[in-house]
Image (cartoon, rainbow, N blue to C red; front, side, top):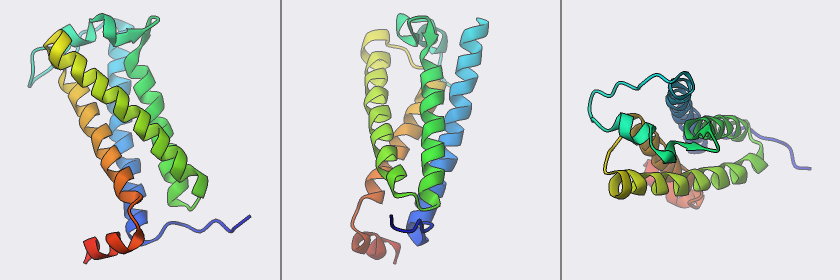
Length: 153
């Protein structure tokens, strides 16, 4: 078994940024989960569609808030990014898979907001922005090292 070496340089920053972004997503998802479970409405300040989106049939799966699945996913991303930061190689591929699945789900939910519900929830859009940013970071992490070195110069 090869030794576990901490990530260095650009990779270190990349996994650190991934971990920090996932914490923001975790906070957003936990907030929405608590509001859903307690039956409280969410106060949106930018858009007016939060109640329509969060009260829709798409906001839960089997009575379980969809935001709770998001919280679990963001926690997994945080954990795997932390492991990758400390050099665990297997965490990198799992991180890519989970973020890939999150991205697919995000695209589906954006489609539902735009074309089915025709309403937007700013907290959902924040989560989408975070997930798409995580996807970009994951794609960037798999660029060959020489491309990243030229980008950092």
